[in-house]
Length: 123
Image (cartoon, rainbow, N blue to C red; front, top):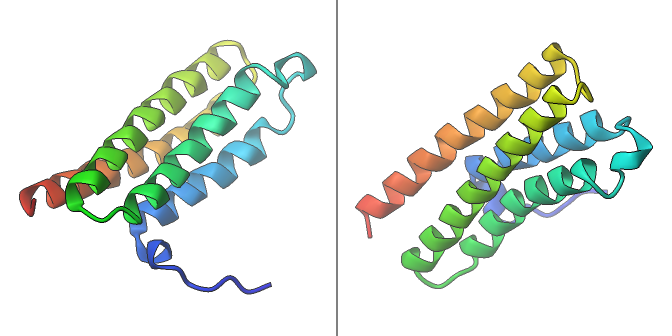
C-alpha cells in the first residue's frame, strides 16, 4: 500500500521520529510479559507521542502553536530517554541495543532542538 506524501512527511524531524518509533517497537517486542502494561507500554506511547505531536503541531495555523507542540514533543522525547535508561538498568536490553536506540534518540533530539531554534528565530 502506498501512502500519499503528506506535508509532514517532508519534515526530517518527523522522519527521524518515525524511525525511532519503529526501533522502539522492534526492541521492546520481547520485554518481559510483566512489562506489557508497564515500561513497554509507557515507552511505546511516549515515542509515538513524539511523532504524533510533531504532526499535530504541523497542522496548527501559527508558528507559535507549532513551536508549542514541538516543545511538547521534546518533553516526550526526554521521557523516552529516561524510560530507555530504566530498561537498560533492569537488563531488558543489552548495551548494543541500548546504544542503537539511544543514538537514534540523540539524533532526533539534536534535529528537533535545531528545528525549534530555527522556527523561533523566524517567529
